[in-house]
Image: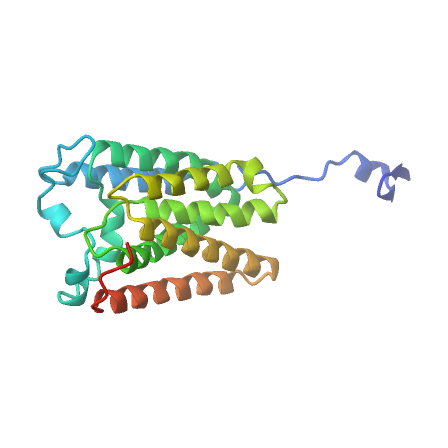
Length: 247
C-alpha cells in the first residue's frame, strides 16, 4: 500500500490520475453553436432589402416582415412563430456581427461544459423568455439573437458556480455587466429581451443542474419546458393587453 494525502491506496491506484472534467471535455466540437451561427447568417442573407450597416433604415422584405416580433401580430394575427423567428433576424451587419461573435465565444466553452443537447435546450428556452421580455417591455418591433445569448450567459453563471469558479473570474460576470450597460446606454435596444433571456437562461441552467445533481436529468428538461410554456403564455397575454410597455 502507498500512503497518499487521502489515505492508503494500492500502488496501481496511487499511480492513477483522477480525471478532471474541464469545460471542453464533454464534446469534441460545439456543433450546435456552429449550426446556430449558420442559421442566423443564412437568415440575415435572406432578408430582402437588407443593406444596412449600422441602422435599420430601409429594412423591409418578406423575411423580415413575416419574422420580426410585435404585439399586434401576436394578439390579432395569432402569428406565434414570431416568438422564435424574431430571434434569428438582425437589422444590420453590426448587429449580427456583434451577436454572433459573443455566441461563438460563449458556445466554445459552454456547449462542451454542459453538452450539446442541454446547450440547445437552454438557447431556445432563453429565446422564448427573451421574446416574452421584449413584448412586456417594448411596444414596438423587436428582433435579434441577443435574448437567447443572454440566456446562455445566465446558464453559464450557474455552471461556473457549480464548478466553484468565480463568476467574475470566468469572465461571464464582466460580459453580462458590459452587455447590460450597452442595453441601457444605447437607444433602440430591447432591454426586455436581454433581461428576459438572462432570467430564462439562468432558470433553465438551474433546472438542468439541479436535476443532474439528483441523477434525474429528465426533470431538468421538463423544467426547461415549463419555463418555455410560461414564456409563451406570458407573451401571448402581454401582447393582448392594452399596456403600452414599460420602456
